[in-house]
Length: 185
Image (tube, rainbow, N blue to C red; front, side, top):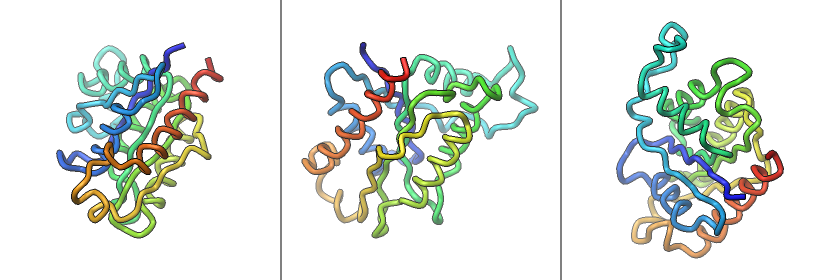
């Protein structure tokens, strides 16, 4: 079974190290696993139940839900903004949590990884993202973790896709996510 993993990046910055980490996931996904880097979170409006009306959902939110619906699992990339996850990632989770009990995250494996400048690599933000994804109905893979500290220094002259240690750790997380998706199928 080929596994489709949707990658959502919590940074909108073009040069984001978390985006580069997601690009590395796409590039180094094991055989039988397709990691799709979702483009378009910048266009998704803030979640508001008043605009989440069946048949009239904003196009960007409907596109996110459709991509998530085609996916078997999720890989969330979270930088750390003021000790927590960025709003764009939380917003995506909120849209995917609806309709309540039947959202696109429901019962699908979710792993959260990331990199940040600080010495802990964004673990607080990643923990918050795991919590939100779990509350939203996702099956959070608690052991599938990767927090890379010192991103500004570590990736100053090398793309994460070219860092052998990062690639090995990231590939292991992707393998765990794919295994979780196969077990859930």
